[in-house]
Each structure stands twice: as structure tokens, then as C-alpha cells.
Length: 274
Image (cartoon, rainbow, N blue to C red; front, side):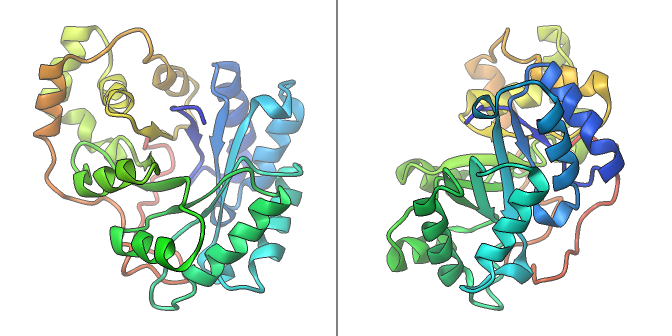
């Protein structure tokens, strides 16, 4: 799984194909979408026309909350595969735990069957907390490969990251730039000046250096190119200490305990780099 990918949350369907093709031309090989986003078919169009072998791409999509449950998972993944135009996804995630419906355990058991059949090469979760993960591990036979969570300098989730490390779960950060809030912080701006990089590149390099996978979103070609240009420098131990001190425990998205079957609680700014 590449450590840096393109996220297409809140990217309009008519902008998605061009954004993905731009990313692939810049060297990205990981694309993250979801049934909820309404742009799986546009991602699929880019996959079909990009000229890159399928096995060289890492494609992630997610099961939406209303499709949780034993009998709903397979039809949902088949719809996603058809829209993407692929025979399998590299990673399939439960989008939110939705504890109010209490279906994530049976949903995960259905994911295990999808994995065994080869429809998903890896299975994971998104927005799960430590109690949710503990329950999955106690009641099923497969530990999630990935937990995709809100994670940025203002909301670093240290306890959850430590739990992931102890159980070989990859930490994947959505909204890795905190919807742009981190980019205006004086510490980030000072580090950018010192390293000759942009604030976004400093924050994305921070994710890389602490071991996260990150999926920044943009539809702007210059930003897409900028976001992947982070592998020619490293942050120092002191840089990392300064960035660690920016944690305020403040979310930009909703609390996983409160999310139900209808999407809510998200910013609607489309062109904001996430």
C-alpha cells in the first residue's frame, strides 16, 4: 500500500476523472474513494484510460453505513466493483462503525468472506475507535489491515495510533491537512520556510515520518503535484517535537459514535485541500 495516495471525498463526479488522471501522471498509484462519494464510476473511467496496469494500482473503496449487515455487503461490493470497472479492490473498508445499529461485527464477518473469495485483497475499517476494534478482534478471526481515521496535527489520536501499532493495523489519515487549518499555523509556516517547502508538504512529510498513510484531496493540478513532492527531505527530531505539540484534540469531522446511516457533519468545501 503506497504511503501517499489521492483521496476523492467531496470531489464532484465530473471533476474526478481528470483529478485522478492528473494524480496518476504525477506518480500516485493509490486512489481512495467510497460508495458514498458518488464518484466510483469516474474513478473507474480514469483506471480504464490511464494506461497503467491494474496490478500497479492500489484502489480503495468503502461500504456505506446503510449497506451494513450480512445480506447487504455482497450486493454493495458488487455495485462498487461494477462502477470501478475492476474485478477486485485492493482495500475494502467499513466506512463507519455505526454503533447505533450494532451491525459492524456481522458486516466484518461478511468482509472476511469477500476477502476469502478474492473480491477484496485486504479488508479494513474506517473511523473505528479502540473499543470497536477490540470487539472485532474478540468476536471475529481477522484483525483489520487498516483503520482510516481523521488525523492531522490538530487531532493526532496518539492512543489509537499506539493501539494500531501494537496490533499491526496500518494507520491511514483522512483529512491529513485538517481541512487546511494546519497550513496556517506559525510553526508549520516556519518549518516550511526552513526546509524550502510549502506548509502542505511539511504536514504530509510529518505523516510519512511518523508512519501514517495519508490521502490528501485536491482537484487542482498544482496542488496534486505538490502533495506528492515530499520524498526528497525529512523532518528532524526537533521538527517532529514541534509538530507533536500542535495537538489540540479538535476534530474537523464528526464523532464516530454519532454517525448514523445518513451523511452529516462534513464541510462542503469542494476545492479545499484535505
